[in-house]
Length: 257
Image 1 (cartoon, rainbow, N blue to C red):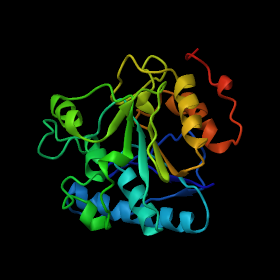
Image 2 (cartoon, one colour):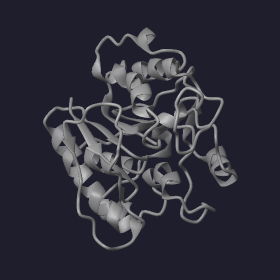
Image 3 (spheres, rainbow, N blue to C red):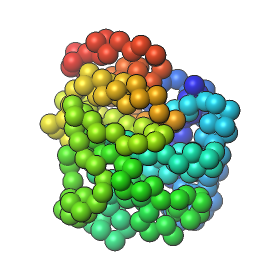
């Protein structure tokens, strides 16, 4: 199992990127002077090639980065390796905005919607990324939704569930974990903290349940926090099930001391 670090938030390099696990490989590039999506497409094309190579060699890559949009490169890489993944997406937010629906224009609020086929001209076409069917996607504990996101999810075929009542899609799984799914009282320094979430122990237990299917082909970790708060050390044990056949979930503390 290899850990690939992508120390970026969108197209911005994070010189003080704090990852919850030690990386085997770090991807950094000199990005072109162009629009945000074009710059990200260049970065994610390299991510996709790196993931495809790892999967083709029988590896299960773990990709950690500063936001959720890196998932576009991970899924493109799986597809390049001949894998058509379903998605299990742990996130306090929906990430199902489009460039048209987002009032803030924040690109990090769009990746899941782009993965299921919205506005392919934005970046999917640049990566050769095929849409993942909505029915092959599970959104876990997406509790902070803007009105356009809630309206979309009411009719979409995306499954929504809590960490306690996982509903998993069929087929090979891309497991994506935005650490802000954890209750913000337990995880300091989050960019977009959301109260009322599950504990770290519950999230780790749910991750182990997904892994126990034996169908997880890649893992993404979105480290959506400010540097200097110790967030990586707090979040790290949550990924323990990814690196252990028999994970000791009880070792993940219930609260930050």
